[in-house]
Image (cartoon, rainbow, N blue to C red; front, side):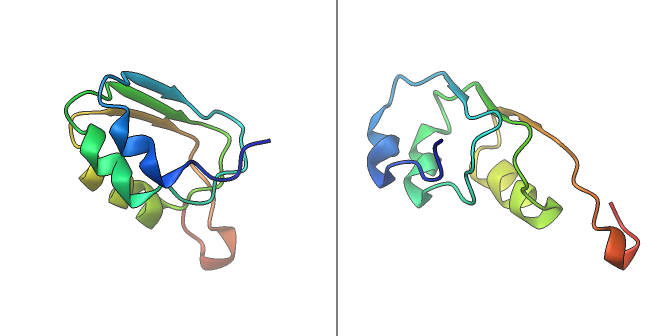
Length: 79
């Protein structure tokens, strides 16, 4: 199972879709921002990213459709 993407993923300038559904990713490499004009969709469903992490990814990839699963922060009474 994948738990980290290579830092040089930003060199894949023709990458249009990244399917990471159900992996053990805990963060995306900083270089992912280099794909903001090519990456059309990223599937992060079934990965335990919290809302602040998703917002960071949305800011890094504003033109990319990001699929994710809402994680309940139940101990704080928030989703």
